[in-house]
Image 1 (cartoon, rainbow, N blue to C red):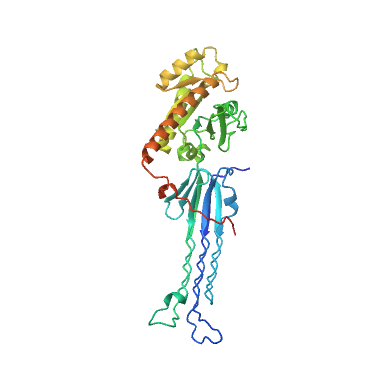
Image 2: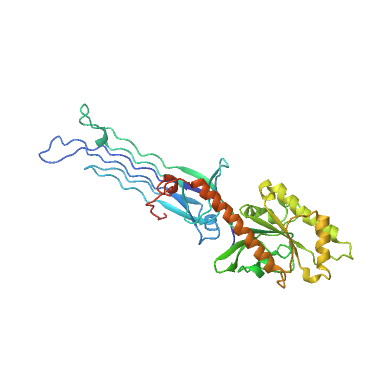
Length: 372
């Protein structure tokens, strides 16, 4: 399936039905009084996050979503029927923006999370509501209200714990294939990866994490060069970034390490240009293809020294698997600690709240999941 991570749609909620101005007409009851019912509510349009959906491709071909209008009220105290709602299913990680203002409206980052994209109009009131002691035969009624009409932009930011950075052909796809269940295309030419790949790394039956591989970055990516800039947004949700560097051509006796260091620094600059938030994320250095070196430890030492790197560094061979297990276990331990901190912070934040507090029950219920 083609990967699509952005789409623009138009949503039009249904208009509420009009109220009715009617009077009871029955034999032997000459003055039956008003009996006009209310109009039905117009259909609303909702979005719900579904972990079984991976792309926004359906919304590239179905851009207009219109709910039906509510029925008009009728005599004999008959209320108009409410129109069916529409529920649009989107991938978990979808961010929804107002296309006209650019405002972020919703961020659906949990399975089953549901939001209202366009609320249906309320039905009008029938004349039974206007009866009074001084107005025994009211002819007043109200029209149904228009439903909301919005132009929206959907943007998918994949949910992953670890993001892979690096130049084209740095070995990111080989690495994700080695450690996870992902099967990306691997070839010896630049930009083999054309869309993000997600892989689940399972370290035990109960412990795992998700790795995201995006197309390789090149200098100028933040301004639109290459393919990586299109997918940098997918790294914004990650907890740690792995910066893979191909060191297969480096050797202490050959003066080529400066170029590799310069390339690595260029990637870091692109991160900073694109987003300070992304630049500030924890980042680990991973020197790949060490199986092609005669003295990998010396190369590791020289590279870190010239790169000015003092953070975590790992030397691996994604092809042979050497060093990958140590890296995977280090990532798992780090992520477990980070998640434990987040859980503790969340527990402290909600301490003292009652289970029936409305803040815990924000999801809308009784939604009819029928699409026009």
